[in-house]
Length: 308
Image (cartoon, rainbow, N blue to C red; front, side, top):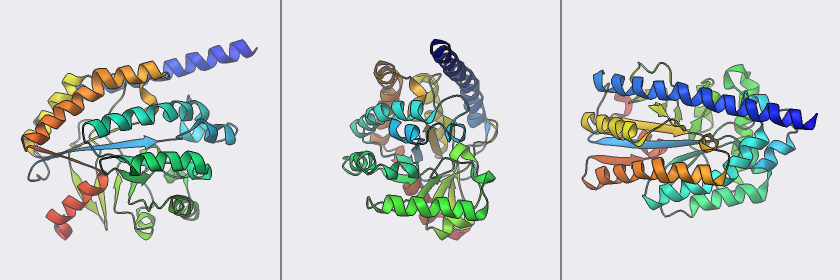
């Protein structure tokens, strides 16, 4: 019986990854064509490259502590413990690549990780001690869909995030909605957030822009990264952003690139690091800056302010 349950879990996880990768490959091609054809909404002095990283669990302990009761809020196929176990190993690898190529990123931490003091401290310390200035944002507290939360429930989540991260001297200013379900923007303003990431919408849309919504900035996502991505497509899309002087906002989950150390390191070595190196060349020739969600929003505010 146990053997069958494990087999079913393995097949479900494998099927989930296969579907995600195939959809993403088509999406990348469609995005590339759309980005090339679309007239930019607004241009900056030079292109921006922005990364945001969704930390859904951060550690296996969190998923185990919830006893499987919160799994469906995090993923349709995977358990919190499964995701947390991978993220625990993947985060240092991606952070190392960002640091090597001097690329700051927004790491959106799920608030409940702060209930595990040692784990949270290790993650926060690694981010704060990095040679580049990363942005520590928030990704909900329990990873529940904000569109399904009442105003009172959403406020409770945001209060718990604020209290939890304050223990580690962090006051998040960037917010990534769980499952990209945007709601309760007025509460984000109340809790002093400055920016958020909108849902991706149609790949035919223009995903290379930043817009002001109330007193917040929507640092719109451009492309989701997973195992199907290729350095060539990424390089082409970055070239489009540079030519048009617009922001390219890439986002991903650390658990997306394999469930073993070897798979994660192989992806970073074969795809991720080569792209960061390519982007580094653009930075050095003066055609690109690398930004966090927060620093990108600050640049938009400095350039346009209330005019956006």
